[in-house]
Amino acid sequence: MKLALAGLFLISSVIGIPSPVLAQALAGQPLEWSELEDAGRFHLRQDVPIENTGVIFREGQEFHLVALHGIEGISMIYAEAYAVQCPDLEAHTDEVTLVLPRPTDKPDPVGRDRRVAVDLKRGCHIGIYIEAADYYWPSFFQTAAN
Image 1 (tube, rainbow, N blue to C red):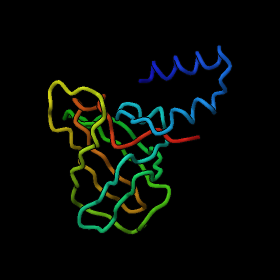
Image 2: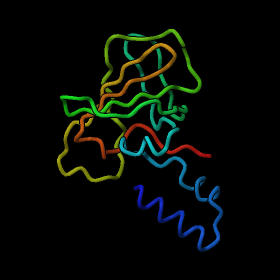
Image 3: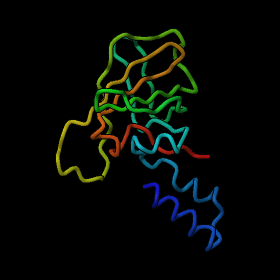
């Protein structure tokens, strides 16, 4: 998707479509986990309830990326993001919630379970644990409008 977006920006500059117009047109496109770092900020494309806390992050809620890196010794990627509008700054959990990102039109020849583990830290930071095999698979985030 990164290459496609770069191509669209190049084409838009050649044919005279302003970048803000193109950015608005691309807003709401599902992001793969691998695209979070480039995006920096993004919106949920589905509700994400955090079990045993009463906190539900709602579709459309804005998040900003804090960290994205591999976890040494295991085939997992860790992403951390914080909610811009926090429903409860003190809520947190020691447990993880399994969340299945809403399907997209991307074909899944393997048909495997692509759930991720999500935990909640104080200050509305969520930690997301992604299997390395799912790093290039759609997340539960989408591109944000500028």
